[in-house]
Amino acid sequence: MAILTSPSEPIPFMKRLLPFAALVVAAPLHAQMAAADRPAADRAAQTITAASIAERVGIIAHDSMEGRDTPSRGLDLTAQWVADEFRRAGLKPAGDRGGWIQRYPISRVQLDPAKSSLVLRGPGGAWTGSFASDVASLRPVTATTQVSGPVLIVSGAATAEQVMAAGPKGKVLVVASAPGSGRPRIPASVQVALREGAAAVVVLSGRTGTGFDAQVARQQRASISRPSGERETPVLEVRGDAADAFLRGTGADPAALRAGTEGVVRSLPGVTAEVTVGNAAGEALSAPNTIGILEGSDPALKGEYVLFTAHMDHVGTTSGGRCRAQGADSTCNGADDDASGTVMVVELARAFAQKGARPKRSIVFMTVSGEERGLWGSAHWAEHPTVPLKDVVANVNLDMVGRNWPDTIVAIGKEHSDLGATLNRVNAQHPELGMTAIDDIWPDENFYRRSDHYNFARKGVPILFFFNGVHADYHQASDSPEKIDAEKMARLARLIFYLGQDIGNAAERPKWDPESYKAVVEPSGTS
Image 1: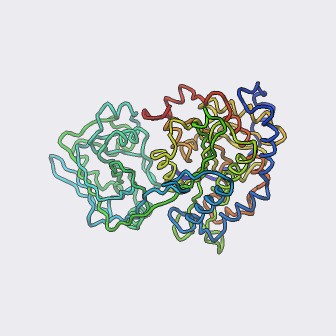
Image 2 (image 1 turned 30 degrees about the vertical axis):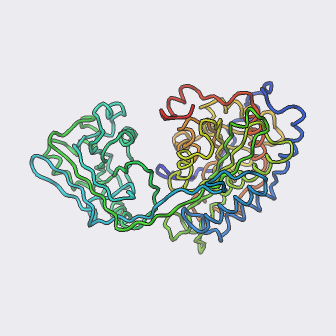
Image 3 (image 1 turned 60 degrees about the vertical axis):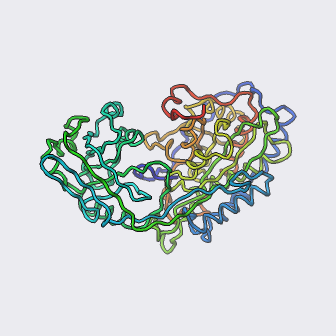
C-alpha cells in the first residue's frame, strides 16, 4: 500500500461492522455460469488452499527477495517467479514482445543545488533562493528543467473553480499552507492547476528547523523517479519566512496568506518567478509488470476482459530509509503488503484455469511494481495497455489481504458501480466461506486513490479494491510471513473467484454510478 498522503496511526483490529445477514439477499442469477458448470467452478475453488498460500507467501516474502524494492534484484526475481507460476497455470503471456514481462522506464536522478535556483522578481527588486539552504524540491524532476512566468497567489481556501478562473496555465503559483513541522500538502485546487499547465508551484509553509533541513538534505541524494513522458512541473517549498520581505514589497501579505485571511486567488502585477532545477547525474533504469491472460470460453465475449491485479513490490531494506527495522532484522519483507495480494492473483489464475472453470470473458492477471513509489507500474499499463483498455470491463485489485479480522474484508469502491451489488449477491450466495465484504470504513484516509486500481478507475474501468487495513507492522521489517492468516486468505480468494465467475459470465458488463463516473473518470476515460 503506497503512502500518498500523510501516514496515519496503525488501525487496530475492529469488530465486524456489518452482520452477514445485512448483505443483499441472493437475487436470480443473471447470465451466470450454466448449471452444469457450477460443480466445476466449485471444484476449482477448492484448489485454493491455505497450505498453498502460506508456501507462496513464504517464497516472495523471504529475506532473499531483499524487500522487493523498485527497482531491485529481488523485484526482478519476483516478477520472474510470477511469470513461471502463470506459465504453469496455462496462461498465455501478455507482456512486451510476446513475453510475460512489461518493462517501463524509470530513472535514478540527483539534484545539483549549484545548478538550481528560485528567483522572484518585482518592481522593487529580486529575491534569490538557494537550493542548498532556502528552497526544497517536493517533487523529483528527471531532467534539468527551467520555467518562468507571472506569479499567481493562491490561498489554501481556494477552490479548483476559482484557481482555473484565474488562468493558471503558464503561471507560477505561490501557495500558502498553515505553518507546521511536517511536509506541506498541496491543495486539491492546485493539483488541478498542475494538471492544466501551471508552470511551477512555490509553497510558503513557514516550516523551519530539522524538518525543512531534512527535506533539503534529502533532495541532494540520488532518488528514483518515473518519467511520465509529459512536462515535469517543479513543486518547491521555501524555508520559513525567507521570501516574506520580498513578497510584502509586492503588496502581498504572507502571514495573512498562511492564516487564510488573504484574498483567495489574485495576480501580483509585475512580479515573475524563474525556476531552475538542475540534475547532477542520471541513470536510465526499468521495472517490471508481469501479465498473463486466460482466454474466455465464449467467442463473442472473449474480446472483453476482467482484470485482477496486485502489486508485487515493497519498500526494500532499512538501508533505503523507507522502512523501519525490527531489532536486528533490516529486511522489510512485505508479507501482507503485498505478497498477500500477489499470491492471491497467482492462486486465482490457477483456479480459473481448471477444467470447466474458464468464464466466457477473458481474464488478465497482472502483478505490478512501483506501487510503493506512486502507483508507477499500473500507471504505465493504463497508458500502454497490452489489451484494449476500452474492453476491460472490471478491475479487482488486492492489496494487504492477509491480516486483521479473520471473517471480514473491506471492499473499497462498492458504491461507485453495480459491482458493489454483484459482490453483495455473490457474498450472500456463499455463507460457507465465512467472509463478509463490507464498505469502506476509512473514507478520510482516501484509500480509493492509494492503490493500483485507481489508475484504471480514472480511465473508466469499474473497480473493487479488497483491503484489510493497515496494522502495527505496516512498512516495517516485522511484516513477516508467519503473521499471515493463510486460512482467511484462502476463503477470501474463493469468494473473489466466485465474484470473477459472475463478472466473467454476466450478459452485460458492469455499469458505473453516473455521479461517481463524473467525479472519478478523466475526460479521456474508456467508458
